[in-house]
Image 1 (cartoon, rainbow, N blue to C red):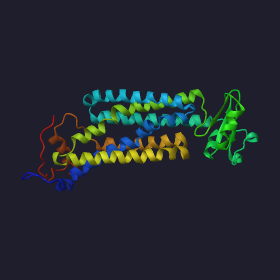
Image 2: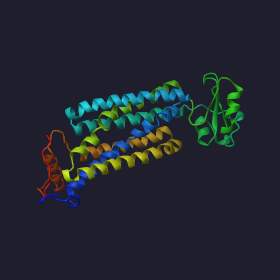
Image 3: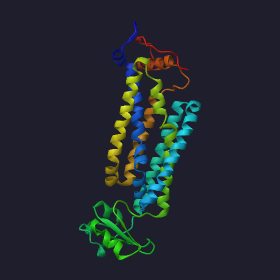
Image 4: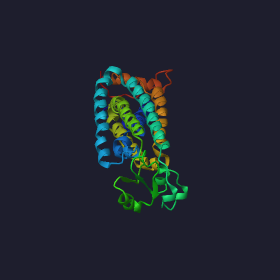
Length: 312
């Protein structure tokens, strides 16, 4: 450090910089625990949960959410300076809470409409504990449906090894091992909620955490702090991605996305309380915000010299 400037370690000991790090790392974690990469990574799996049984169709439909995410990101690039970081992020997180709750509700309707099992024809060892397709798959068996639900309202529950028996008995039979067939209206609601979620997330929760992290740190600390923020982002990403399939297996789609909605709601309150508006402020002004906040806004605390040029 130049003469009279604080070192990195001296800066890390100040309450203002600690508040900046809590905000920067917290925003990156919030971005991931809102469930964004579960939707991006597992779109085909989510569509299967929604009743899209054909894998090719699920993969093709997965292109649509990616397109919505890209368009929303372009909107965010336009809005981030016009609306401000704080307003854009608060609006985005609020919309994410609503759309995640809607996605949970759509999955609940889908799960409640699960097709019944014909116990007399079922060969699954746990058939006595199985009432419908959802519970059949939950116990590790597969659901065999012959024809459309209106024609054959009940299916059979059989061991996964019986897939050939199911499809071999009828040209219209379909064997489901990971998700149940859904009514088109409920499947459509799930797809619509996924698209609405991405439209809510991409303009605000996508770019704002990165923009804020680029603005709030002292010059001497910027590289280290942004590296720590990126690490927090990827660590949260890994944790959410690794637990998604476990959650959907144990809680179903409705329970999983309800958890994400609850976490996002907590994040909304935290952002409202902790995030100042940084748009249009110089680096010195942003630093003053955090120093005053760390001092309880009662008095100006002793400040370590900070090498910072104004960033308008």
